[in-house]
Image (cartoon, rainbow, N blue to C red; front, side, top):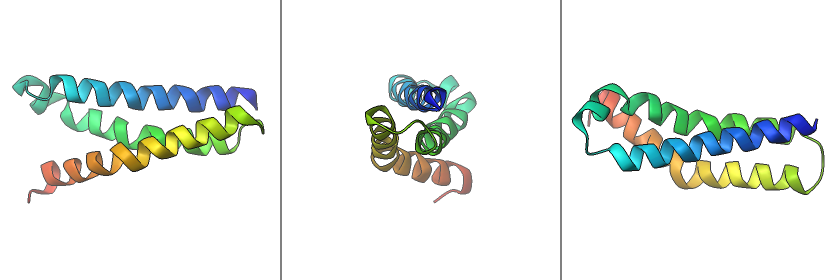
Length: 92
C-alpha cells in the first residue's frame, strides 16, 4: 500500500512537470503544433490518477498529503488545461 502513495506523488510530479513545460514552451510554434495537446492531456489525467492511487494508499499523513496535492493541482490548473484543450480541439 505504501507503493500507491509513491505512485500518487509520481503522478503529481508528472503533472507539475507538464505544467512547467507548457508554460515554458508555449510560444514555440513547433511545440504548439506537435506537443501541446499531449501535454494538456498529461496535465489533466495525471492528478486524477494520482488522487485515485492516493485514496487506496496506506493510511496516514502521506496519503492525506498526496490526495490534497493532486486535488489542488487538479482544481487550480487542470480546469484551465481542460478548457484550453476544448478550445483547441473544437474551436470557439
